[in-house]
Image 1 (tube, rainbow over the protein chains, first blue to last red):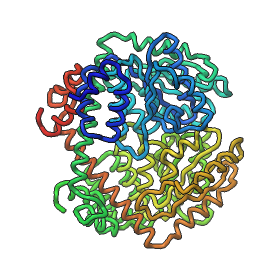
Image 2: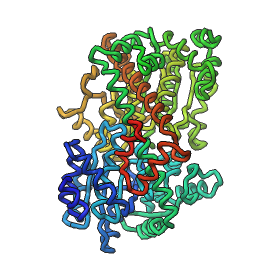
Image 3: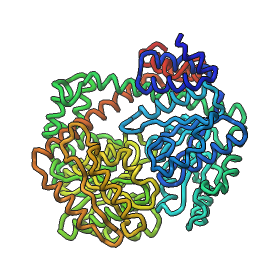
Image 4: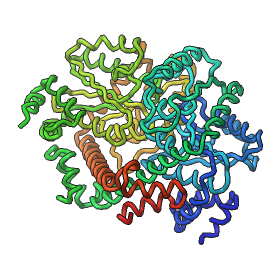
Length: 319
Length: 319
């Protein structure tokens, strides 16, 4: 048995950080240790925080960390957002802002690189959350930039999802329509001291009131998210966000367990798909070395063969 | 032979639209027709336009359509951006703005739904572009919202990629760092009449000048994108964007064919991966019906089994 396992389950953060790094580098034994700690998790409440760049997600996460610490609750932050100061990718001013938690032992911050990760991102996030959960953090905040597949993955990994928007981003309401509303448990209009905040709130209120609100089929959550006006930078509305999250934390066990079963299904399904894809890729080789893919690609590039027939032939081994 | 094939290759847009709808609905014969027209394409220049919501992608696309029409060139727009007025998803004001092309027979607009499409989005985009290409459009503009996987897919389907940013979106430069710079052939700072534009341009210039500019390994494009200041809404800088795109259209044949071979490789590889994943999903069943996945998921949700071991067991058929 990996000695890190008992340490992590006992709350040893040095061991937890070591395992996370080992998982990143795919070192021998890391996955086995991850599997061994998994049964010890399940107690953390995982909150996804997502939204477009510039809406103030990091500032809100920072404020939520402050609230948790004020209650004496330990909290972990997983920053998957490349623009987040938590991930170390931001300008100096933002980093300085984060310093107030840097020496607080009750706050653990872990950033995940996002570049070029397809599928791997959700795997890393899931693994990181599993380690933090097993290490005993009662609250884990996962910050992701909202758009594309990443925030859907977060919805599948989180017990609650906060979608953050802000006035003045152009088609913010439209962008929300395109998928983020579907995953929101709490919908925050941040930077609410800006011009256009009233209009954004009114628009969202109308959208939420309409029967057409798109909840996912079979989704046990209530039909519409809580709508909160906030200005995380000044602290305004942060208690309302906290109250909305607390309400979700207090959800009946049956509701929570239905959500967790769905999460498990999506995680396992995604992993199975990823493994199948990796196996298929290995079988066809690369475009740069002689092999089935390379010869097929030459024909496609010359328009002698279409990509769909090419893929079919490769899949069925007819190349 | 599908009668639509000859019509499309002859430039019949009614037939082209019919095939696109048939492909969306996966009607019998649609894929065969797509395969049949594929060899007739390859002449269109495909330009991807991507960036965060609110940077003015649609306005720039609109301006580029205007430039093409001014030259007497026919142009097709594929809107994969859910917030684009081209996709019909935007507010009335934006739709009205687009009306000026609505009656122009030299402009063809096709919007693609993005909701819930994983992998399928790039397939639809590729198919749509192939139809428009075979139908004889010399220029195809593909607008996608930039973040996550979608814009990477666009890079693989386009002969040139315009990445649009704008001042005042917060960490716009940081967001660019996270992947969009890697795929940009032309980098547009739009809304350049806004406060912060000079700073954004200076920051980007510095980034591009640094040796660390991340070009993709084996990528035959030049190392750094053209940086253009624009204000698409007023028309300022649009000729500079056009000039940058024209320079790419005039690239040597060898360079273009290397890029197209790489595109073909990525398209075929993605299709093979998708087929493998679909086959794996079909084999394990769903979480809601008795079968391998459902029983495994119950154990994962109860934390008796970890998701990684569960996926492995399902993949190897040990469930």
